[in-house]
Image (spheres, helix red, strand yellow):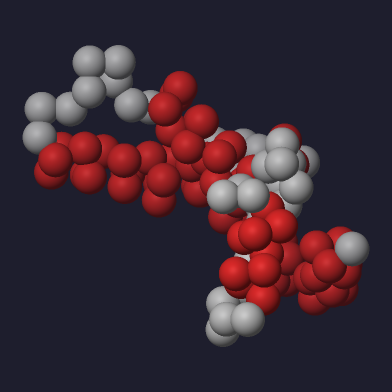
Length: 103
């Protein structure tokens, strides 16, 4: 469907379109980064023997390693959990990040 046609279809409905221009991946880039790290750093190349094993292993990666152990360059070398803890202890930083996200 052409973008102009898609826009006209969405214009009269309750839903709003949420798309960046073609070739721009800004809307989805944080999640794409998480999945890239998950696939390249954690998931075995041969896959998993069962769905339960995959769920347990991937949950461990996301909730434990990715959030609490793995440092992130964006956070100045801190883990997401450490960066969030620092933000909650320093309210003026929260305001700074809120403004940066809006801009």
